Length: 458
Image 1 (cartoon, rainbow, N blue to C red):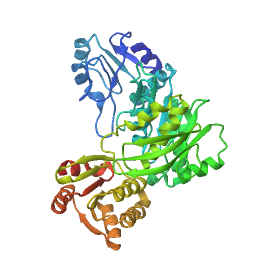
Image 2 (image 1 turned 180 degrees about the vertical axis):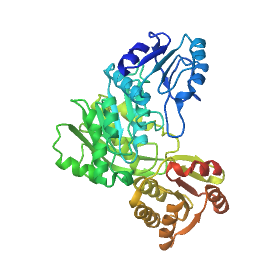
Image 3 (image 1 turned 45 degrees about the vertical axis):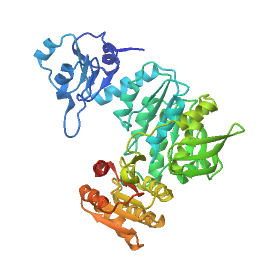
Image 4 (image 1 turned 135 degrees about the vertical axis):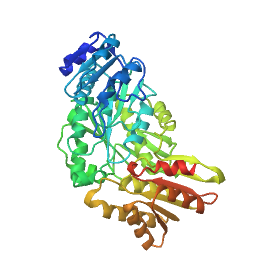
């Protein structure tokens, strides 16, 4: 199932500037810092830099081909690297999307696509862990879930027998594009919350955006949804689509339901009825939201014929992508919950509830701004402050303009709060007040760079 240079030229209506059109194109990279020998380099033009200008560096590092747009290639480079292929296209992003769509069509394998306001990456991780017990599985690395990351993931297909791909969005229309490229057999929607509500204007529009995952779903495909989410439950109860829908939940009657749930700091136990048999499951990460993630994995697994013993093993042994509910043990019996990759109201609420249920000496939360909330920002940050108070968090430390809103709200309910001006100040404050047996939650949108706080506390 090799793709050659000549295939790329044909698919993208490209032009071969130099090199052999019969070169095989197996691995694709958009980053000259990590590119490896025999990769195909894709020049991406961003807002602040133009990756197309780095083609010579890519060739120097061993790239066998380059896909470029909008530049003149130096004749000296062409002569020096005459054994490499240089392809010129009108738009490199659209080019890799077309090539990825073409490559997807070469594979008759289960493709599982995942979207949602919260929990996409952790759901992808647990589903991939289960699916990989039965099939050689390719999954989205990190959070490469956008119009560039999804095609690059698909282009990584080799001898895989299944693929689990995460899909993110900022606006309407974006998931539709990704779904039509990936053409999933199974689509999973984890929930519809408030993430990107500043761009989309309402939760109804967020629901509409998430449901675009159906646009590329195979005709005999299956949609799997969290039936406890109010927006998805409302849609499910009145939807008129012909698509097969499978549900999972804890509260509302669903196809896969967790019962007898025991929530612990480092994991959760629950029972689930699978085809008439009660199965006991263990998730190795704390928090009720990971019970939901496990239920989605069970639903996916049963659709593609994975036996119960492998489902159980995949759930028990799954590992989270770093910076998502990652527990870090420090000296003096202090624990950090590193959840600093991203944040919106729903994930903030879930993380605070998890923190509250721990048996630590004191529960400390370091929270920062949730971005891209637009006119809803103030209200949603107030609601986070209310959650801090409701869950009786012992100490709150905040950074950021909207962090101040969280802090002020929590303070009004009597929570010990500190509003600080920088991540460095936050680290200093924690070191000043920390005691043996404490647990510290670190969470904010990625743009707040709270990873600096985690590193500062290690």
